Amino acid sequence: MLTFSAVTAQLIQFTDPHLCGDAAATLRGVATLPALERALAHAQARHWNAAALLVTGDLVQDDPRGYAHFRRLFAPLGKPVHCIPGNHDLGPEMRAALAGEPFVLGGHFDVGAWRVVMLDSSAPGTASGRLAPTALAQLDHALGTAGARHALVCLHHHPIDMGSRWLDRVGLVNRDDFLAVLDHHDNVRAVLWGHVHQELDTERRGVRFLATPATCAQFLPGAADFAIDLKPPAYRVLALHDDGRLDTHVEWLAAT
Image (spheres, rainbow, N blue to C red):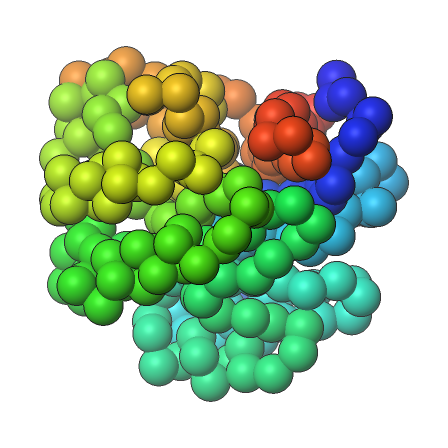
């Protein structure tokens, strides 16, 4: 469970809903829209004192009509919804569908003693990710101007290996550039991503590296070739402390 003493802010991360225009559409055996609705209801019942929501990519499954469902679910929630695209998102359509409050695409925001940086790692035409020079410059600037704030950096693609041969072929291809920027700043406390449809909580040079399962189907950890895990949909809750500590856990929904 999270520790709530001296918490400057709480955030909720949803990732990889893979919505389609068809409300009954499934992805690898999971009806994606009902699964996202369940995740939202679960979070609203348990963690709705969060300051903001993070959605880290693959909002849709290559179908721009899915953004209408996403907007319908998230627009009335009364919280900022900070989004970044994944490899299945459609940039122009996503920006058009999520223009205006409560949606914020990319950039960075401050919450209490923390700065949260949202990076676009999507690269059109490939499942792999890449941070453009402008994104790396954005990251360097956001970290360098954060003052005394601690930093949480979010992107879609995994910047370290997951220990899964097939999945590590579609991670962040210029991870060395990304990690070099992180290593240049001493205020980074955690890096957070989606894409991998599984949980990871590890550490590199004193920084937490966190992968979050999808709100739909999951991938089998450690698999050499593509394989589905039987774990249910999930989302992540984060508690950011004034002193730079981060408490976090994944909420797994009950199997249906």
